[in-house]
Length: 159
Image 1 (tube, rainbow, N blue to C red):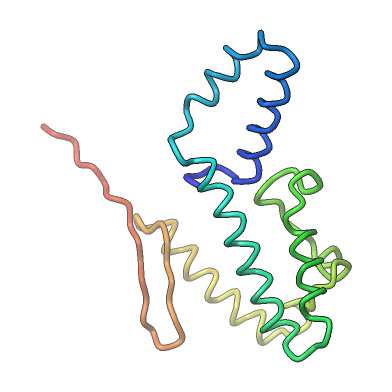
Image 2: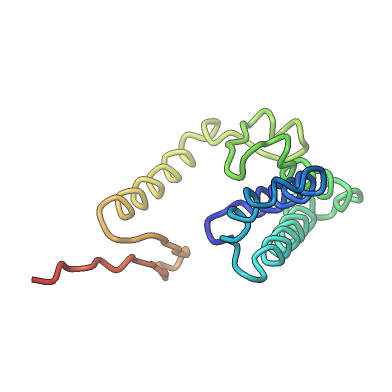
């Protein structure tokens, strides 16, 4: 949320509450940190977590595990593992193929299909070229060639 990991923000807030309760002399330290939070920021973090967990669980149930009797249980277990902030220690940690398989995700290595790998890497390189050589921040394009591209505004120096 606003560039901060929602789980990290809530974890830090709970830590602040515990420390201040244990030692009121810590109030000024935490006050400086927590003062930077806008009103409703903690609620936004909480809602972002709930919405993303719900979205991932629904996608796992209806896509990856569609038609399986235990789809709901599998999805819930995977969401729990993916959102284990203490275990993952960061929001954007890479999760390796073997770890994904171990947690129950039905994944395949792109390297096992050379044609698919070539197609995926071609798309990847095209988007990387666009992001690296233009002011594009975000690019979304579908199979029909329709796209949305968000660009940063470049400020021109005033003479």
